[in-house]
Length: 273
View 1 (cartoon, helix red, strand yellow):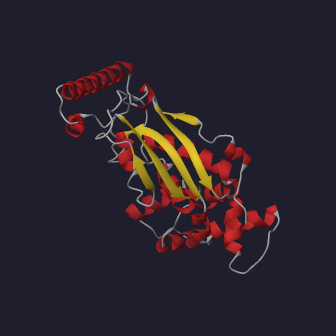
View 2: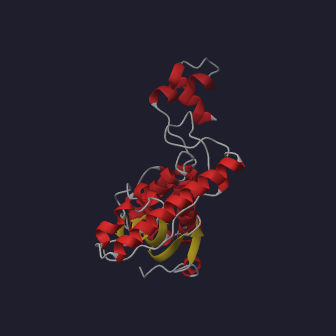
View 3: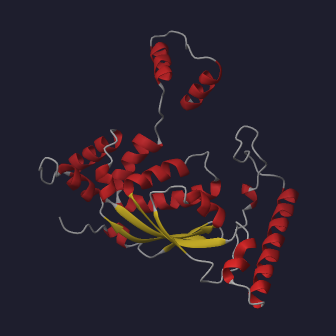
């Protein structure tokens, strides 16, 4: 089978798609497409090319039943510019291959992330790691932005002074803020990329990394529209139920009472809401 070329994907290669205030995502390259997925799956039993409808059905079947290896045949390479605190969440997805700009070799640029006012929130009382819903009032938002901006400016001025004194770049950088932008090339196969997207598009993920995930999702959709549709149907838009939750569903369908109580009932109802 020849190299897969997807016209819609070719149109966006090397184009920067803005994310946050100074960030971007750029699709550098891709290997494979929906066609590669179905061909690699069918090689097991030697079937030839099928119709669009059959290909779509096969991809849906593979994803629904967690047949992952055909999706690993498709790879993406992205050039991403993001705040360091986003990168530190991102890098936890260990199946990606990364080459990041080095503060030992290069002088870091004076670009730091400042959130929009609508994304400045109090700490959530329910979610220990997330924001509460609803932005703070305008006066407090202005105060927050002023504090962040002043601290970013002060940190970079210290960095520049250390460099001017001849201090090594690897040491001068140590006090730079997590809001500073970094860049990397990031490569991942489609199976693991879908896992990344499932986690980082979730409402519980931090807004800033969700913004990058949404941009990447739309790029992946251009390369693999059928696989992306199956992902949204069977993974992103689905819920997993425990054995006791399935028993509760059976009782409810029979018109019987829900046997779950307490925290188990609360979590179950959250899945249904």
